[in-house]
Length: 129
Image (tube, rainbow, N blue to C red; front, top):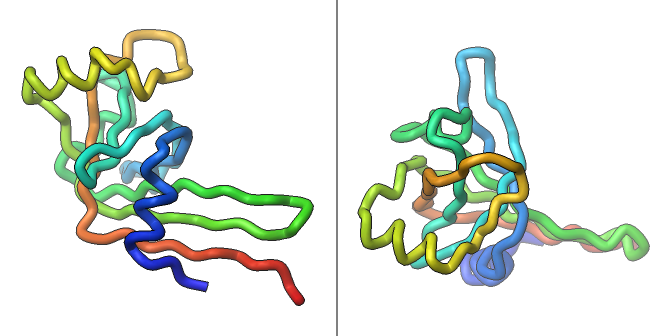
C-alpha cells in the first residue's frame, strides 16, 4: 500500500537513523546516518572530507524504514533530492546548539548536509491475510 506524502513526512519527522545513498565513480554507496527533519529538509552531520559530504550538488536518496518481524509488517520512506551543505552560519549555530542529530560515529562531524526533496514516496508492507 502506498503512503501519502503527508504520511511519509509523519514517519520521517521524528528523526533517528536512516541511510543515504551517495553516487561514486564505482557505483552507489549506502551508509547509515543519524538524521532529523527541519522545514521539509532531511539533515545529517558528517565529516567535511567524508564520503557523505561528497555529493554536494548531486542527486542522492535517503531511506528510513520500520518493521515488526513478528507481525511480518513494516513501512519504508524514500527521499530523493539534491544534496547541499548547510553553510549559513546562523542556521549551523542554531542546529548545532540543539545537538540533534548527534552522530554515533566518533570524530569530528561539523558539516551539516541537507536533502530537500521535490517529493517523498513510501509504502506499507502489510501481513498476508
